[in-house]
Length: 236
Image 1 (tube, helix red, strand yellow):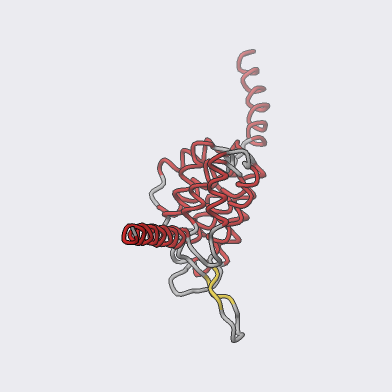
Image 2 (cartoon, one colour):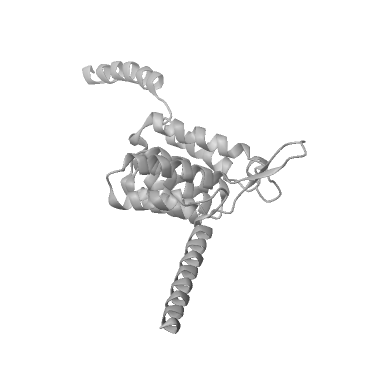
């Protein structure tokens, strides 16, 4: 009898306690971020459709806001992010997850972000990658930024005015980042060499254009030296 009473008392005490304290498993902060990010990478999202647009798209600002929110939360997001990246099938989503991982301090992702900045098929990913790498100020990104000076994505500025010009966002970010990195690592021999190369670039010139121009200049110098040597031989 005493056991029965004890069971009844326990039931009356435990059932209300469990009912009051029962909660669904809390949704992690990363899941909310993932939902926002997936919307930005959705091909049906008109704010991220670059196919027929020559303007800066709202998704660029929204992706930057997502990255900043992740940075506020911090590296605690990295375990979930890595698990999601490993099973993610969408190339654009995976690219953005790589960018966010680097923004959270994942050193192994820095090189991959450089690859995304240069090789991603999605302009918004390349822009997000460039902004993130610029913030990191990592010496190893100098070469990646030089490669990004050839980025072909542009927007048309000018609105309704008669003067309209092309603006290359990734190139612009890359050039600003290079100036900062070369100043930061001024004692580095290779950084100095890259800085000298950057100083030789003309306005609106790509890195590929610069290389072609320098090779052409070198060819002409060699031809001039050969001609001068030939004249000297004839004079003798």
